[in-house]
Image 1: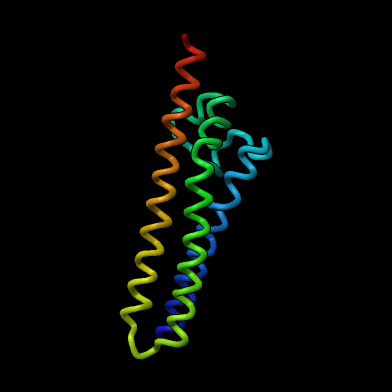
Image 2: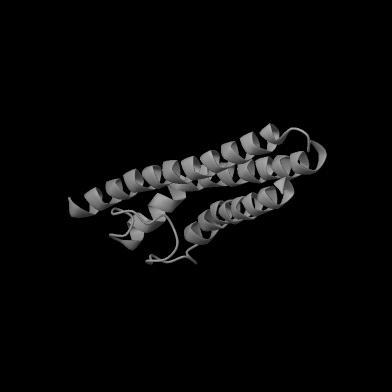
Length: 126
């Protein structure tokens, strides 16, 4: 039962890390246009294309580090499920830390993107 739960958690973490690693590259290369589906969609980043691009550029390092750390923790989670079966605490703790890190990193990146976009929007308005 523990392995099935870990596998489900790992799939979610892999999806989150994939988003964290793909959004910076596509958004800063100009392939991810301002939209209502994907990206760091805040009030400020949605106001203009320049704000969208600048916000994603400034948030990119945070998202990349978050994505890499989540991948590493997901590997630890999967390994612990197979090799430390007598101690489910390790898997539970690793999974919880991984999700907190992923969600926290995305929120932090969104805050940074919003601040950067607000600067761009204020410069355009001035």
